[in-house]
Picture (cartoon, rainbow, N blue to C red):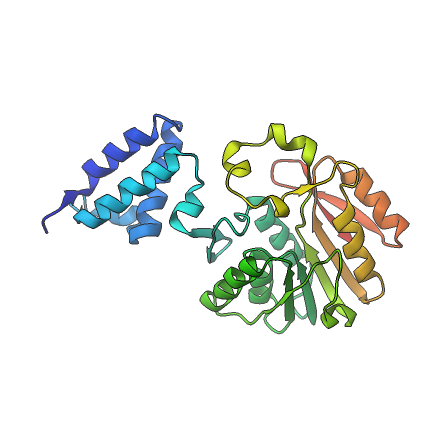
Length: 284
């Protein structure tokens, strides 16, 4: 095959990336590009040192590297993100799924028996990562996923089809809910709503601020728990006797979340993520 030797190509583009990123991260980014753009995984690269790519693939790599050097997240460059065992389509219309959110789903799967729940709400679904992962785990459950963004819901629908699960997607604003689905009993409510205070912007990386959707990230400093309060209000009269509400939360807001839940008639506890930070709240 006439074309470009992959090993030399990797070295060339990794060196360019290393001008902006640490060497190990540059190598990892190149590995992701090759796998997600061309399906060339690490084992193939190791087993076939003479592997070649064609001129168009070389051009694609070059364009992808330019985008990475501009600070664009690699998931938006490839249009794909991994979440547990799922491969998801992503774009700047949705947040990139985070490892902490993967951990939220794993904790729910561990804490709840597989025969439950019957009905699940995922509020603020974005890419659909939580809803789809829960639909995989609780195969007999009815999963309903809500989002205010039509563009996000279109991506989430594609992701559900890609991963072979049935999820009902509903466009609605949880702060002004109108969907009749919110009037039905529910066994499990899950949400990773906006929880970053506007005052925390200065501490965030530019690749998040410049690329990811603001309405999925930020809340006002004077009412940082508004989404949680509204979701708990919706769940209050619809949650079944053994039902639970699970949230991903701001690590600074653990005590405030427990107080909010208590004031609204819920028993709550906070759980820690893999980094030892308060990250989740479980209510019943």
